[in-house]
Image 1 (cartoon, rainbow, N blue to C red):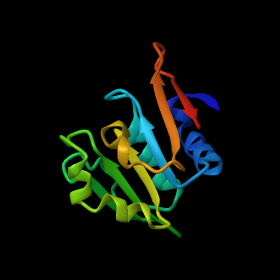
Image 2: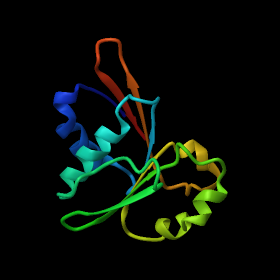
Image 3: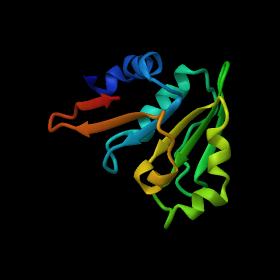
Length: 134
């Protein structure tokens, strides 16, 4: 499923993802600066998070509390190998009922369960984004 959106349509895009994701484990694939974290912030907002949401580039994982859900937001851009994900207990996070958002999932591809929802974002020349949800 593909949708094209502008930043003004971010709220509707986030709602669409929440309603149509096949699991609560979301993998965000996009080039640097395309809007992974921006979209994740909006999804968190839609799930009732009122805290400040930021990319966990240095901490690897941030935890947020929504209205009814816990959310774990991972950013694996800076890891050197999958062992670093093991060191923070990544597999234990997967065993929870929380929403799990993963930026740069290709860095830990051997650790990912099969039931993840894959999200690919591409930036068009006109500033719009194309999101593939599958």
